[in-house]
Length: 329
Ligand code: ASP
Image (cartoon, rainbow, N blue to C red; front, side, top):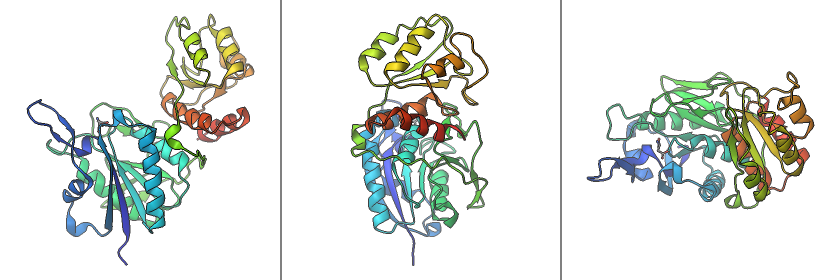
């Protein structure tokens, strides 16, 4: 029997062509156009194409995430072997991580995008799309969770980041590397393990992400009052191992007693420290005051995870558990 793959399209560079005489490109291709760019003989699946949006990914929001979740549920119900989602690269790591948290299925879900639009030499969209389809058709992809397939590599959604503005190799998993790659058209898996955390939100479209504050030298905490007035939560990208200037540490600790305050690191790799420093502003007193460690999750992912948990009205214990589980890879 011919396997079925559902292709869900959101726009992005992979769907972009010249928009006329303005000199640039913009998303305007639909799913059927993306499939037309592939070698039809090599396309071994029946493709069900769903165009959810045709927008740049800086315009994606949780309504789009909710639509994607609905479409994945429908795809699973009609017996799809796998789901492939195309979108822009700018927010790919966030959408993929949100869907990874909110969708519980063994059917492989692969996000894919392009760094070069379809009219540019060496456009990477068709090869990436072909690789993503091959990946979700491979039985070993079952149960992998959400993955990102780019530039011949496969990354777990929780690990991957866009780490270059224009390279075709823009996506990497700085802490753990790719979990697999595509070689001669076939999937090679190096590692299977993902965090495995699944969360349920009644209305994903209602998710609101909390503020994310990146600290620098001599930060004076001007953002503390605006953040307090929102009364939701806060993600800090702290200095080094997750530190704040001692001058603002008492105010951060006070805030952490009122709302969930999650600490990540602006360093880009490695986990937030838990037990090395005890000077004011460092991890030991911050943790004692209730600041929650995000482990290896970066600020962008912690913001998504905390947004999902706040939408669930999760308890402090549940928030700590979720970050411990996702952040300890
Ligand atoms: N640079 C982006 C892309 O790769 C534009 C976007 O994110 O939509 O698709």
